[in-house]
Length: 116
Length: 109
Image (cartoon, rainbow over all chains, first blue to last red; front, side, top):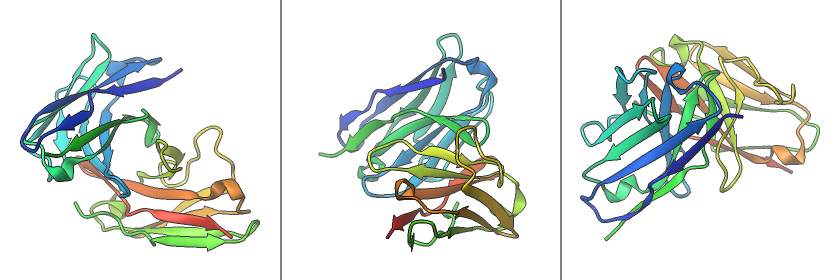
């Protein structure tokens, strides 16, 4: 059974940093591109970033480019999102998702709150 | 990287059909056959309903169907049921990126 479990969310002050993790199981992790998607409270889904299977190719939405870094450790079957210079507007539930047949599998999300 | 445009809400009575549109550009919806649709209940993770414009994942009822014409994709729910009341989002690949729609709330009257 495919499982994606996010962790690492929490309360952080503006300008702070946080690293999210997504532990994957039930499939051959390095065979799949992975994505991060976020959803601010009461708002819609927003694509954040994606990474290919071996980690050699990444892309980001404009609003996080230069502040966020997506990475993966295929030996640990884990996806990461390192977030720096956090802003109030980065407050959201962050989901990881597996790329196949669209975003075919999603985790339950981890909540990031940026507030002073 | 502008969000795809969806109607804010659509509604229908049980048994009726509703269609949700998703309008983008030739750089996203119109340029790729990689449009997907997601159903989301409050407080829950999104659930895939359609991928590659018209394909249904295993377990999704055939009441859900997808199509595309030009820069606009559509999700049709036929034989609307109470449990279909949820938010729906389209998503399209756009080269190295992906972009979601603004979301549509489906209300079953």
